[in-house]
Length: 329
Ligand code: SER
Image (cartoon, rainbow, N blue to C red):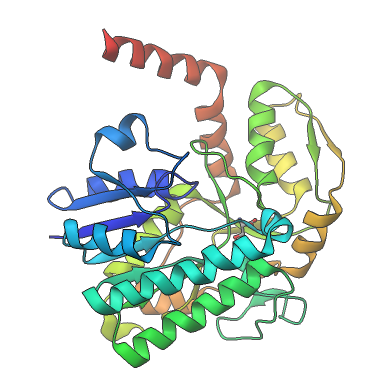
């Protein structure tokens, strides 16, 4: 039986991962940890227990771990890259101080810990194409600094205390469910929302800005599969490169046009996001994840685009509303 605490359960990844974990471990307890002002609602609230767990409060983490006999913590609390530049102290407090609290509680209560890292853990001095698993990590964003620190701290707790820490470096994540907030890769979510509404999209990044991206179903599967991987096979832990697709704004716009011929995009650059994107790799080499725990993505750009637009189309939204109305009656 698995008893899991998801910290940041109402965020971009957490709101979908919590539901998936509850289906994946039907006999376990999957606790949705949330902060004030971001309480779980709807299916997330109704499908399992939830607790107020602020990652900056070690006592709250320990109390939830104790109450539900937690054996695994998914630590998804984070401030994304662009917002982190505006609030570096908060990014450190949550990204590093929060992780320290999680690791300390896990040391005392013997929990396994998953903490995502990111393509943002790399910087200008990293090889940009086919970025290797083990390479230079000298990011110049506070987001990246917290991610590299998190990777090192997690590995340290495994070596020093035997805590089972594991992680993947997520690419930009794309989903039709919970919108992201404050990231550099978010344009690749917003573009679909504009296309589905028949609106023109103003792209904050210039043509030729390549970054790794991934459809949320693949990302959720990665988060579960890495924690289920045979530890004997793991040479790496914190953190594995994983990849699914790499594109620039021109490529995603052209793919959307195949489904929405009238779609229009204009460039309106955001210098902060452009500078951050320019410091990140174009595409990661994920061969270690493939070798050590059989990682394999299912969605490419075309398959993801088709699915995103299907779910975001006005008729799909109407169907959802109808379903809800029928359920309520
Ligand atoms: N999606 C994140 C961001 O753009 C990167 O991991 O900040």
